[in-house]
Image (cartoon, helix red, strand yellow):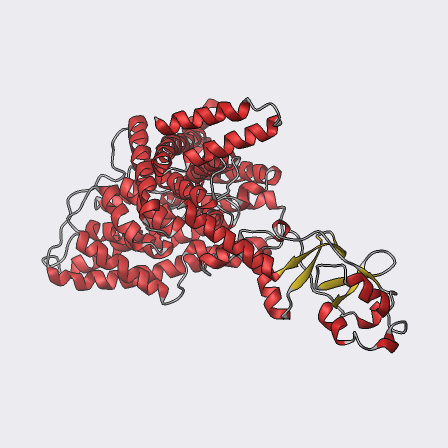
Length: 605
């Protein structure tokens, strides 16, 4: 109450000040409000609000998937008068129809593809101060729901994380909070989205901390728990408190069976690696080898998946129904074994061709089929010492997903929450860890990090580089330029630079274009050569060619160029005209900007 009264008193005081312009008054109010919001207890209030909004948004996204699932089903076709014998021929074409619509949307809104996916949220958190465009809520949810609802082989977790994170980012930027606070709120949105979508609050928290933020500090942990709890409560209020998979009770038959789970973990790691390889090969194939208009590529992917579904309908959509069959022992081992590879191909084709969705549900599916086939084999050999195939299917689910995402802890707890079965926690733990470590034998990066690396984005260099990457050259450059004409004599050069604060001077031609650069160090070495005063001109002394920066470069790129050239100042050129100098950037200013950002981050914590 004291804080509130103080804030209201100061607001009236500033608003009534007759000499200050309205813009200044509003700025002061905003700064006061920002300071008030940045109190820890108010961060928890914001986290709760994000939990509610993200929980509602993720549930609405599930409804959207269900709606498109009906539209692209026999019931939906009956709405437009298509019934009877035509249905068996038309239903396998539904993924292609969904791909056509998705391709058209992505053609007119190309950022819908670029901004989709968990890896994009990780990129935004690490290098873009948590800024995610608000339109992602519409483009991501619509295109992903079309892909999954029409039968494309993809999961809903990626879009769900994107939607929840966009809610957190929008709220954080609405109140002009610091970079660190916005990052936490993005994590809150991701946690709430996952928690509401899968009715798994613990998994939502760990997913956000382990994958999105990589930060388990208490200041981060507390708001994310609040958001996850509120998100789960919102989802349960709208959808009911139902677990995702209804499974029978499982058990560890013998402690010697742990050896078999170790071997299953090894197989899950190998299959996870196969999945990521095929996934990226498919991306490269559709990007470089398929020479058709880009909007038609998702349709081609949908057609391939539809043809596979003629014999194996289990590959369509997220595959939850068939996963539940594996977990209930209703699948024969031969079918389960075949579906491992068909699902890998279907998911890779769907997402590689331009369809939108996540890889978590396909990873669960692949793991369930692998576990079911492996369980049938070992149970057939030794039925008295081993659990049923459905137990191995349950364990395999988390092991493949944990390896692909490189988040075994998240998947251990998520598996427990998805099934509400704690009785085989020991096999789940050991299999997930062995699978993740086997996968790391081939690559240390999750599928999300690998996708960013293929795009030339590295978010794993540490906090220092992340801070430098988040600041642009335009924010620190000095627009005061001392340029030297090419024909200026040495004597005049001395006079010109004596009034300048710079150490480096662009040498320009008659059109004002930079042709070289002159350093104070070079001029100083020749300062006593009086006979050169009128004989030597700037063009004779300048260094060519010149390496420069653009305003859009980040400070990490600037520091790399400083280190490469061993200079203290670099010219900044116009991004569309690399010969026109618009400013200079000092190494000292880059270091100062980094130090300021570190201090602000520490203070905001």
